[in-house]
Image 1: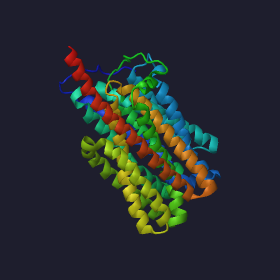
Image 2: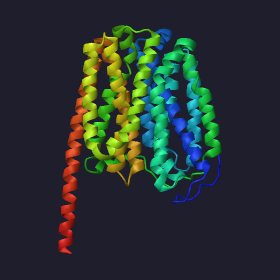
Image 3: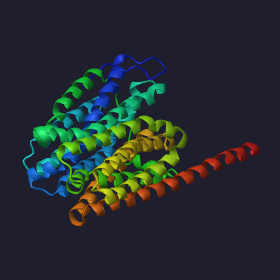
Amino acid sequence: MSGPTLPANSSETVDQASWGAVVALSLCASTLVASEFMPVSLLTPIATDLHLTEGQAGQAIAVSGIFAVLTSLFISAATPKFDRRTVLLLLTVLMLVSGLIVAFAPNYAVLMSGRALVGMVIGGFWSLSAATVMRLVPAKDVPRGLAIINGGNALATTVAAPLGSFLGQYIGWRGAFFCVVPIAAVTFVWLYLSLPAMPNRTKASAFAVFRVLRKPLVPVGMAAAALFFLGQFALFTYLRPFLETITRVDVSTLSVLLLVMGVSGLVGTTFIGRILEKRLSAALIAMPLMMAVLALALIALGSSLGAVAGLLALWGLIGTAAPVGWWSWVSKALPDDAEAGGGLMVAVVQLAITGGAAFGGVLFDHAGYQSTFTFSALMLVACAVAAFVAARGSTAQSAVQPASRSIQHGQA
């Protein structure tokens, strides 16, 4: 699949086709995120239709996470001779196929196979997204390009759960998942027309992404990110059964609550950048602590609709914005290894989402929602502790480096 020739990455203005490709990538990102998290608002009808427990249905998120992890770690090594344009187009086709498989799944095994495919697309797309933007636009415009893609992510996070609940009410959970198919088709055509040829210029080994772990404080930071997403999705995945059985809301009210949480998340994503510019470390410590308090408050106030609505709005405000903080940390901690660091971060995030959905489901089925939400709170507190350790280490490292340079200068 050949495309238009990509202009050199310079300070010159990039043509409309390149920015069109960035917007198409944003559409791809929003469709992927919607596909990934739509089961959250459809757990009950999926479980009923396929004769599963809510915990088993929640594994639809877990299995996509497993395959996202594997793909993010090894896609560069597995496709060394493939043009990146071709790889992105093939991933878009897989997204379309996965939507068809899930929508028409007759049983649990077929449902899981469709979710495995979407996991492969998630891992591949996010691993290549930053490097692709860097080749589409001039260096000075890379932050803007990444912001556009993350805007698609935030939009999908905002609408996926309430839209899935709304569509499921009128056209069923299968119809809701089928909606991915035409959007994926439009995305494929848009990418086909706008993406230029992007021959692979790197020679990545199967374990290249792990080399960044040798750098100081990177392992601690990655562990903190893992704990954050583990805690977040242990709770988030099982919101619908909690709201239906404890808060006792109907489907319409459920959709409104999820929309409130989503809109709050969009607001948080809009303003988090200003905070991160000045207080990145403090934000990475404070956000999981606040979410831990919210998780425990949901246990205490779960029967009050008004209280739950307010708590979920705060959860969305903080939880949707927090991932932006972790990607900002990657760019600061690994400025010269952004692609490898990005691939590792994708694997860490997806593995954590998988663990949160899986272990949270086991707890939910066997010990009730209180144990799931308490586990979420504990993981978020552990994230804050790890983020504090990373921040202290970074501060100490920053203080040592100028002193070291002064000594070297004096010796010279």
